[in-house]
Length: 81
Image 1 (cartoon, rainbow, N blue to C red):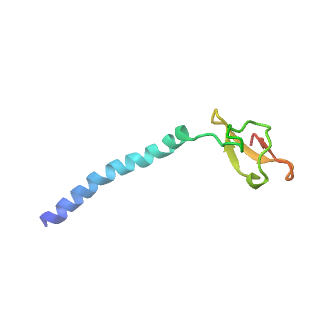
Image 2 (cartoon, helix red, strand yellow):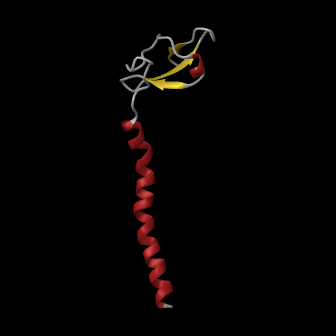
Image 3 (cartoon, helix red, strand yellow):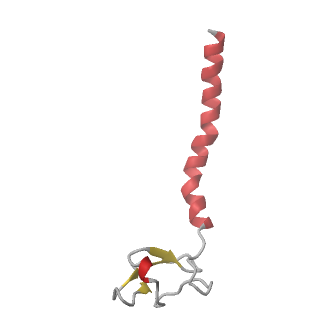
């Protein structure tokens, strides 16, 4: 009986930090997001060409703004959604 009560008590203590980390996870990932790099290594900018393989995918510039690779499928550009 004592072991079962101790196990339940410890399980309650373990779940508190895990729950708080899960709540903080999305906020931290927003701040930690890095920019999407071009083939030359710089961050993408709106209006730049994007690879055809990235068509329909999202990317982020150095300021954290989201862009989508869209437009003409043979010559797509990074554009605001």
